[in-house]
Image (tube, rainbow, N blue to C red; front, side, top):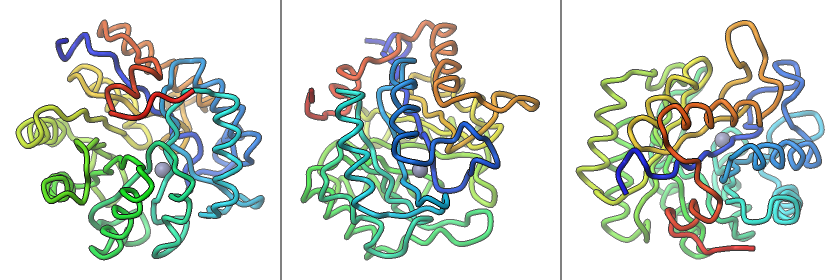
Length: 280
Ligand SMILES: [Zn+2]
């Protein structure tokens, strides 16, 4: 399979911990809204759902009980879809961030280093990173490495080489977060080359935040990577129009895939490429 005929895995980041209904009323906040929005996105072509959970007042939480209800609903309404939970740092501090890992989602996000976010430090100290990675090994959860910086790629590879990450790492480049790495093509190309040089058989993906989302989707699809979209990262279709749904953002990536003659991965293909169990 060449890079350009390989099926493209589309990940939909449905909610996140930052946007609110005031930013876009289509943002799914309750578990029921999340299930409905994910189902539409699954039908539109997404094979991974990346999820955070929220309290009734829209504030972020790491409540394992909410994650459990979401997982149960997703398994029922989107059978086969890869379920990825966020262990990101906006919804809690310390080991609270990994409180949902015993639920054994297919995947969980893992940040392996620190950087700045728009209004604060995104703190990922080495002992917490190692604890989260150990919990993921214990519960057979595949990490998706969130690379906010080049050093995070090297750290993920070091953790894979010494066994803290047991299988081929799946690395996502995150570009466009204010005060962190911007959406920059030479850096993107360097990221891709670095992953290929250090882990030749690794699959990789990329996420662009805000208006950079569509740009990064284009770069990823063209370069043989996988693509992330969704209202967590961007609430607009373009400068003037709010995205009507997560599915609309997924459809936009499907169109990019068609233009680049990349088939869109089914959930079975996504699981196979990521080395996950074939569920459902
Ligand atoms: Zn997230």
